[in-house]
Length: 325
Length: 314
Image (cartoon, rainbow over all chains, first blue to last red; front, side):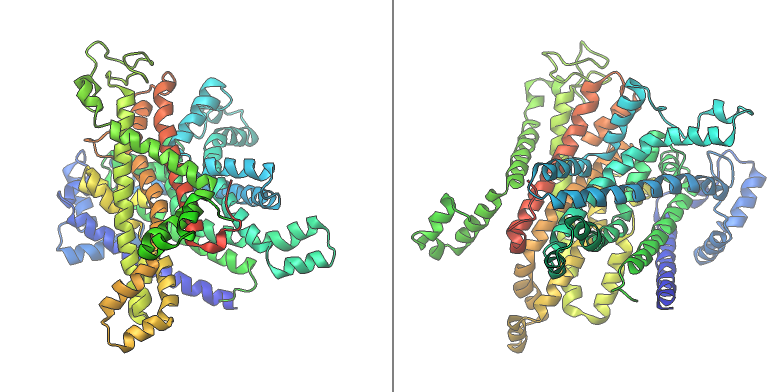
């Protein structure tokens, strides 16, 4: 019951934050140099089409009315037409969203679990060789420059060794082949996904491991661990059942706190690997001055970040019985 | 235990420590810092990069062809591998990669330190005000902080550069600073909240000291070490954001940064043929980030005595 109220409260907060973002973006759009009409309307459009679009977006109205139009259009999913694709922006970005979510969540979940596991091992062998090597590896993963790592991955595993495709998400010859089954297509996507996934995994894995390690070291000093030892419990049971679950909580928090950072990384990874996701679409739109697409992708990313934050909060409350909202 | 020369210096006779408590405290902190291996490695790495940044001022003086941005070798018009003339080779129009690398160090330091400094100043002041004032001011400022914290800085700067056109390096620095203060201000706020309960603040209030003076004379000296610690972490994030921005092609076109070099090697399609060009900028960014991170970790031990017994990464 309480958790439901908490979610509701957070949802209202999210709505307010999002509303502020929406307004700030509108203001920035009108504050920036250049005519809003030329920014929103594709120069290659026919005059009638352009007229229609201007009417629809309310660009010939006074500013306050434009704001109302802007909000109305936003909530009815009308973001204008992309210059580059010539399609409604909404359709374009909705198409890209699942690709991003698949790549992103897989990477985060995988790296959180592996990070927690190795962090546990490292802290257990504190000061020994195992610890040194694991921690050193994590440090390198944590501080390596992401786009460079992505380039290296492509260079080594796609170009030199040739195990994986250079970029993209699907190979057309598989997807246009009518005899290829679903299983075949799925394997093709996974084959393309491994390198970007490995890149994102590396970056997150390092920081989660470091957090888990230091949190575990703190937990091991707690009284209840001493009690468990005094009871003569098996060391493995103490490590895995008593210490690790509690120590893993800060990792969950850090997943939430570093979400903005992860989204940056996601956009970079998608761009380097040409993974057709929303982050790449934003970068692409910005470099092509495709304003409707850029603004809509940014807003969608903002929604995703805010909702993901909520998910992490709820997960945290679920994992830690001490926290009841 | 800490036993080295600097400790003996101020423990022994105690005169130096008495006359200059600042020096004594510095030496004490320094000896703690010096104990940690990662702190020393970080400092050495940092010194190397600082030297690189320093050298970047001299290379164009040797020969104009070594200018990182405009210097083109008259005999070379494409990317070539390392040679005596160009130790790390040249880029696609014959500019020296080593010189670009040195210039990149300068830009990285400039961006990192100035952005971190600004965000720390902003974060510390906002954190202190929020913690000290409490009530509605606190709520408003912290909500603002929460809001900024969830925004992915890189993408925000990206969308701003699409709206306002090509951003120059100082605008980028300013934007990074504007979006990176919330983390700091939260920590500073928590610290201020606990300081507020201490008797010396009460005493100051009773004697009628103004709020302004309490914040800046009584609270600030106590939170400053923490701000300084956060500065090292902010330096890394500022460097990374600037490099990523340049990598995506939205950097300041008038500067040569490591991110820019990576963009050139990537966009001109030399990635697979020119490892001598692909590897150095990435190694430099990663190592500089690593050195600031190590420095921060070692400083953490100096500032937070609880971490001293263990918790250090070796």
